[in-house]
Length: 224
Length: 348
Image: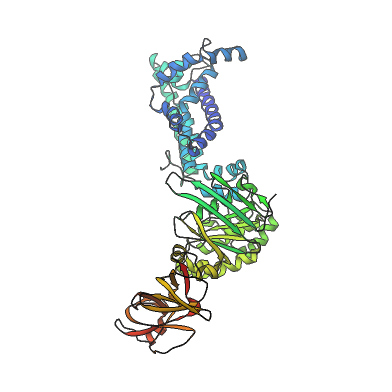
């Protein structure tokens, strides 16, 4: 079993989920409450990774992250390194690829919130930020948990984007799914089987734990 | 600076994409405890209430409360407690946590005692009855020490028996709270039971303000008369006046009323509950006595609506008991009795 690849996959999944929660929750709030006319454009961009082949996303990311692009050049100047074929590049790809899995369930739970609860809080003199923390977040918790679990599971299993952006560098960008592919290519079915079984059991345990904790409220795509 | 006489002075204008336009000017005098915003559904009364709370943006206008300009203030800075139609209690918090949401523990404890909900402290809102939820919502608003309470159709979410009981209780609770309140309702009984002062809204405009008694007895124009439930609106012509009484000819019948200086074409307004029915004929200088035929007797709970034909249609609202005692049947000839002080004229 390729423990190095498994631990890299877990590290990637945890980092992606944590960053997506920080970025995705405000974005979801904006999507759920904004009345801008061009909101549908942002919604479409966020949902793109759901329908694009991972190789297409990976290809554009590779171009966008290369030191010859403005973003890549900026990164090079700040950190002295390049994004493609590094963990940071891999993380960037994962963030984009899993963004809809965080944003959509969270936005759905925000949209389902009774608007009057928020207004009631404002009229009681509580600021917008405090209302968000004390009313919106607690009531949207099931949606936020769903978004986090889905992003985590999705990152753990991603293959195409990782291969395009990260390549296959042991300890840096070789995740569990790539490692399994390699092992099968090398006809090392025993190792591939062990890593696969580990991923299968781990994913099952995470989902089972979530279901048991949130039995009444958890659903992968909340109604409406 | 303009001297501010009233506790609340506002002018609120807002056009909506639906075509509805709010263009309401309102002035509530000092010392009024409960103001009712009254009008049919779609008249803009809830929109006006939301504008006062700062929840409804305006195109133009100004809101002053006790000399302080509210127009540009966000809801948080207006200190106006808002009671939503379905109470909007926080479902993830207990009753005690709801009441203490924006208040000190001491203020919350006192409010819960005042509104008789101390025993419910540990419960969640979904386990409460409608009447209990309303008390919790009131306690939550009061605990935050507002300067003004805004209530949007506070009784409409209750079942009928509770509504009747709360109609009586709510005014007491509002007076206990000692915070001026503005209540939106489309229900006349509620308006009378709750309000001291009333503003009648029709199609986005405040058409008449005054004490509840005054506006209900003396509407300024036919539309207000119809909306405050003056069921008998009869076109007529002033035919003469003597010793403080004016005589109006309406479809061949003469009706006398207290002289308010009207002349020419008028609309005679008579509330159905001000029309009495008698089987005796006779004469009294204080009363109009008009002969008519009973068209229909419609039971309305403890009351009965009697539709008469006096040469013009006339509706009377009498107790079910007196309707039974009079043994009213369609076709019977009776006298409609209307006090001269119960007839009100509107220029037509």
